[in-house]
Length: 541
Image 1: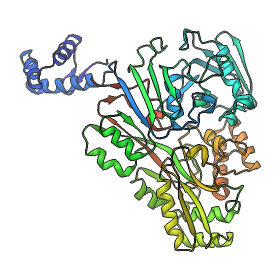
Image 2: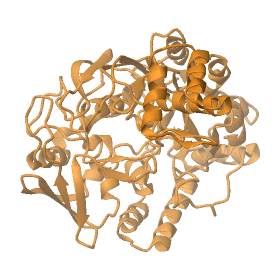
Image 3: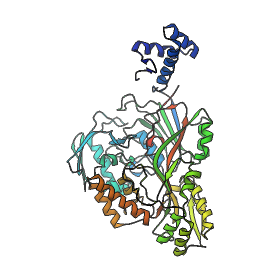
Image 4: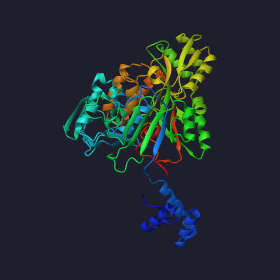
């Protein structure tokens, strides 16, 4: 524990710390502790400050033990423990329980060493050498070596794997072991973001030769005791975890509750201690409960209107443009997200990103321009099916607003609400007009590569631009910041003008947890510490 500092007094000596903490641990009343401190020679005002500082210090000192029950926002029989196939927040959260990556993202969006103890590159950002941490074991007791890393990365290059990270992995020209604990990654072209890219959950390290993921076998903080897709995951503390002192919890039980009110009620009733994806409408209910804490993470997360460009009506550019003008962004920010959001401008780079293009004029809510383009597209007075689901955050509210505003200009939106269960596998990217939710990515290259490059598996609207693809690859290799910013700025203009996605706002990730849960720190890559809460949190006794 760090030294105890007392306002108007200074740091306590080691003996004073021990005395104060001993008195607190013995469990007497606050008044009795104060009397004891005064009797020990402290003035009453100083004694009060000492007690407050010591109480805070004790509260912020991690304790071991307890089982944390967590309710995620989605659950499906398509849930997987294969990192290459991770497709949603439930998969990511489970992944961080059972596996580690070579690197991990910190709260500052920087890559920190994890299974890679260090790395360097050849000066061109093309050939990278990673030192693999020694003394790490998988849950089955076998030692981590470079062979496991080579296998884990190379399996993304096998089409039979069906990886969700092919757009990133296709940058690997060669992944080879150069020693028992050293791996060289040669890229097809320069990319200075490689350590950050390798923090993506899909690149978590599995044991060499693994093909059966029914029981995860990783190096992570928890050992899988149960994994039942669509039901729950149960992990117990990895007693041989390579990070000394971690994790704090005895066990983590993770399951999905797609219905948002049911998730919150489970927390309030004490059935779970942590839950995710809180609707801003419920904030007042949380703030009125002293046993529950709202946890905000400012991020570049967004929910977007997806208009597939390989099917009608999205294959008509005027339809997409008309729908973008029909989005009342200020109303969405204020009424739907209760101001826990900033305005978006129909491209995926949020204002906090250093490569954000602030020169693109903000697209405003303009029903007349919307009517002009939608009439030009020939869709007025024709029913347009629009699929929404609670799991695609705020899609029901945004779809309802579009439907109401559309009526005023002769647009007939047929709002089709479908169950959250199975939405991401059965509807997302498969219906002509629907919604998605995209978590914050730590670099511009990553979000553009995953969701807008022509061959990206998550190219939601099926938008294809050869010019965009060439510019994206060139930006990776550009060492000059200003020139690189101009490239990313040009790509944002292209998506803004012709892309098939409408992005009205970037919103904060809102979670809630028991007041007894400690150690939560915002990490912008997603809810619940960028989905990586398990090894860092503890339950106060």
